[in-house]
Length: 453
Ligand SMILES: Cc1cc2nc3c(=O)[nH]c(=O)nc-3n(C[C@H](O)[C@H](O)[C@H](O)COP(=O)(O)OP(=O)(O)OC[C@H]3O[C@@H](n4cnc5c(N)ncnc54)[C@H](O)[C@@H]3O)c2cc1C
Image (cartoon, rainbow, N blue to C red):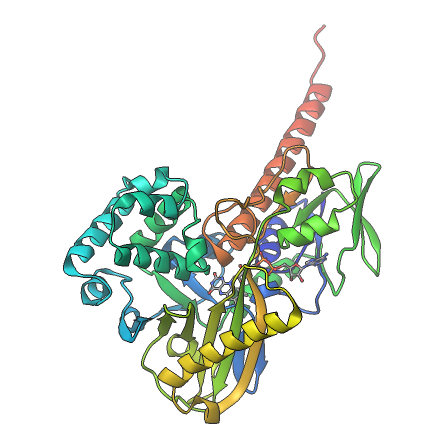
């Protein structure tokens, strides 16, 4: 069986790595850009390792990456973010984020009575008896919960940091999603970790696994421009070739899948996914010649909905000797902003708020900058997991393709969804192959068995 995987991000590499382990499956992974990794692309600049998207792993011991580590024999090291240095800033107040029991007891965000209530909520989620799973959204639950405003705000903020969405969107996350996500995270012994050396440590191993198989290859800088069906095969066209495949795995943002299949007989099946919205943020990375201050590993400005991670406080491998790498992220509003000038003014305002946060906690950073990368609009997750949006399933009935990526159904959020859906797409395809082979063998067996007289 000959398979095409379209997209060389985390999802496509995962799917191809699993498929390439299977004898009898050959394939090509198409990637339109010059490098693999997609939004998890990593690059070096002046001795700093910069990620396009960050590499924090939530709940590593219960994460799909740990399953892949065993199944695909990956090897990587990780380090836990110092939970005592994860802080929230609200008004003028700075307080530990209530990530675990110790921090929860220390935090000034809640009164003792509120803390007791929050602990009871966490306990109920761990025991899987929390009522939130029956509510349409977090917002619906909070509206009926009778909780104080501070507890509601804390819930919103927690969801906003883990799902990378604005507090307004946090209220729209379905209750069942919150329940499953936090059941997993609260049970984890390793709530927030970084993969030491960034995503490249993972993507390079997946790549090596794929190229190790002589029946697999990469088609770099070969964006797939069109697909058609002819004589039982799918013909993929790029600028360099047209090639026939038996199966196709789409491993790219849902918006791009829809674009690619526009005008084909499969377009109508994707209609329910056309209105999906993505999470977009502004990213402000700075590499500093020296450590200017190290008060936190993560500081979230609750007033302006932005945060800074001191990435190198956890992952020292990303900086030259003595250097510091800070990543600032500002959530961007979904509200349409009319006109280029207004949009520019909005982004400038967000940039100024971000720089203020750096000034407040990392004085002297401006003079110490060695590397700076500002991306005014980065797509964190291609489909926000909120009510009104629909994640793309790995298979759609009546459609002959497989889908994976962080906009698809799968376990977890963000990169975990890319990994888990990539693994799932490969498993489904291999199960189909096995079914076919069994059918062929039974026909062959039936053909070769002696005929009854
Ligand atoms: C600023 C930022 C911070 C983040 N922080 C975290 C974090 O801390 N933790 C976490 O878990 N996740 C984080 N993420 C999210 C994570 O990076 C993404 O969820 C993940 O990388 C998505 O992988 P993917 O394979 O689904 O999609 P992509 O990475 O988008 O891969 C799709 C690939 O398909 C290619 N492609 C598209 N169309 C075609 C075509 N027609 N032909 C050929 N190739 C095509 C693209 O070039 C791309 O390489 C962050 C993301 C950002 C942007």
